[in-house]
Length: 243
Image 1 (cartoon, rainbow, N blue to C red):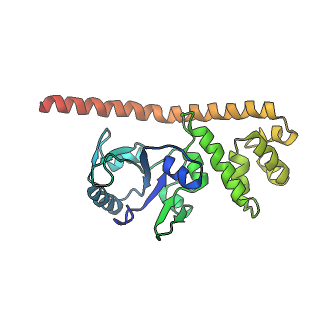
Image 2 (cartoon, rainbow, N blue to C red):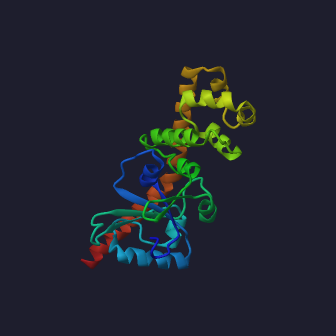
Image 3 (cartoon, rainbow, N blue to C red):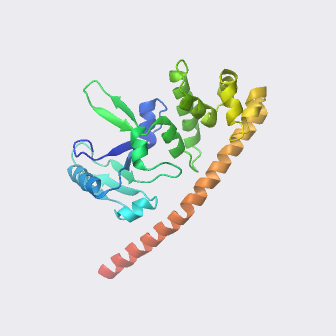
C-alpha cells in the first residue's frame, strides 16, 4: 500500500495488535481515501498483491461511500491467502482527511512507518454488534490511559471519561479529573455512579451502554445487509445467465 502511494489507515484487529490490545485477525482492514487518484494507486497495490475480489459488493466508489466493505484475497508470493478488506466510510466517524490528521504513526527498526487509526477513532470503529469487540475497546482505553496519564491532554481526558469500560478505571478517572467529570456528566450519566463508587450499579450501566451501541450498529447495518443480498442475487442471476 505504501509503495503504491495509496493513502490508507490500518484499522481492525491488526491495528489493535499494534496498540497492544491484541486481537486475533486473519485479515487486514484498511480505511482508504475515496478519490479517483487514490483508487488508481490502490489498483496498483492490489495488482502487486495479485488480489482478486472474493465476495459482493463489486469495487465501486458509490458502494464504498454507502459504508460497504470490499473484500479481496491475495495470491502473490509471500501473501498467499491473505484477505484484505477495504472501506472508505465508518459509522459515526469523520471523513478520511480528518482521521488522517489524527492518525498514529508507528515506526519499526527497519525504518518502515505504519499509519493507524488513532486510538479514539479505533474505539469508535470497534463499537459493533460483536461481543468480542467490547473487551478490546476496554483494553484500548486502559492502555491509552496508562501510557499517557502522566501528561494528560484535555482531549485525552474527555476520551477516557467518555469511553472507559472498566468500572475500576472509571472510579479512578472521576477521582483524578473531577472538573472534567462534572462537565461531561450530562453526556454520560453513569459517571455519577463512578463518583460514588457504586461498582455493581456501574457494571449494570456499562452493560446497558453496550446493548444500546449494539442496537445502534444493528440499525446502521440492516439496510446495508439487505443491499448486499440484492447484490448477491444479481450476481447469481448473472452467473446463471452466462452459464
